[in-house]
Length: 207
Image 1 (cartoon, helix red, strand yellow):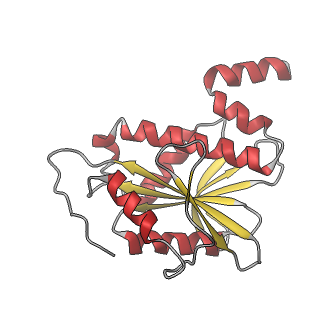
Image 2: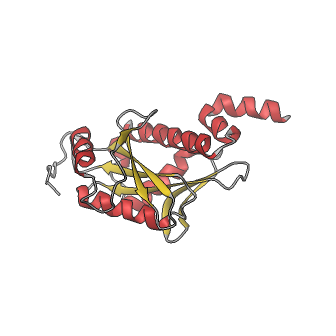
């Protein structure tokens, strides 16, 4: 199969994987990685009664499985610690996208995940993702919006400027942080709603 026909085959199966393959810059690679993760989140929300039973390590493994064989990725890859999900460039360009997965347990728990991302990052990634699974809490949109308002210069990790809407993913937002290397790491915050009717809601504790 020629390279052109192979790309047409990839496009027919997963157009976002084609975008990942063809990305020539770090920003294009990160954009494609985040859209791939958004699509996985949507699939998980569509089968929440099954996936909500998983713990954090198994949710990370599921993400890798759902990303599929066309996306070079792995769970629990070692990079200054065990990174939940790592996506690499299909053509070996050296770009990496890292994601920290947390089952929502309040803003303090989410901020701990942000600190983990800053520790895992080398400073060359540009962007990373903090993915929150709402398994035992409903009203995800409200809780993510409240988290956004709580993040700031008074809380760790310290923000640089204001949080901004993600340009392509509805409901996601982006914060900027200084990395130990001196570079800026932007963290994309995305929620995945796996709560379902009939399950006890643990509420909306302020933290």
